Length: 121
Length: 228
Image (cartoon, rainbow over all chains, first blue to last red; front, side, top):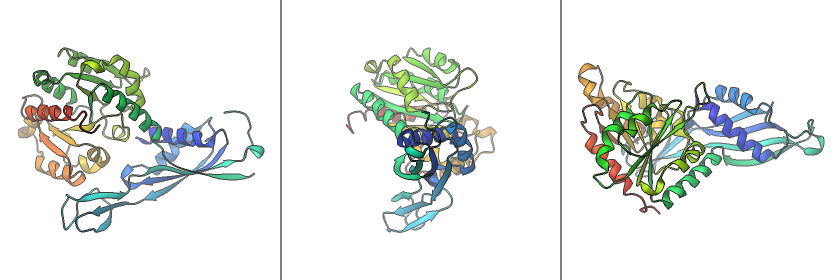
């Protein structure tokens, strides 16, 4: 259910960097711990992006696994369930290495001179 | 058709975080500590506030409350009986509004909050276990209420929320004798998801455990300036 607001945040970020140019493709980097449902995000992105430079842009999501490190035994591992505990040392020194990302990585825009639509949006 | 790739590498929530930082500096300037209070609908946030805020004035902590709700001022009306400054913030546009508070909504309400007359601002977020965890509002601490009528597995289903909170209050423990509920399992699940969480058992109805929560609020309000 948070995908609607996340889509709005993505569209706002993309529009800022597109600077008026038509956007064709958006690449996101999203960590597993963000609990984002890809299909839902794409669905809302299309709705929120309508009538903006994002309209019609395709969405690509790079899935970042949830990786933890135990700073006691220095072990690193990936998790599939939300268990933030080291099997050997307990919970005390566990930290998240990756999996909390929610980044707009890059966008592909049409060059100004040959953009299909030059009207300000 | 020529395409250009533009490298962005920006957190999509940066815009919210920037406004949250502006809120934060306003809070710090006035010496106010802010707690973001979250839960599922009906977990007992408002009742917990009714029970716990009264004694805080005697502990030397001046409290204000910012009530976030989809609609209505039912919660603000309940809190205003305590003679504390209460500001109602509705996310509604007429037919149901936002499911959470974000930094900008809180910012829009700040002119109505007497920041210079309080030490601690409690922001009661919209009841929801998903979206409020995503949006910083400029708070010093996030906490949540989780009641024993909700099921022991909730931390495993909503880890983003449970991980974001430094305090989890388990409310409605007066109901335990009537329920088939394993409170130890809930606590184990909370700590599996968030090993650093402080966990308290409370009944906002009978008052059991409320003193410990009030002590936590007092200790949080003493944080102001400690990190600045």
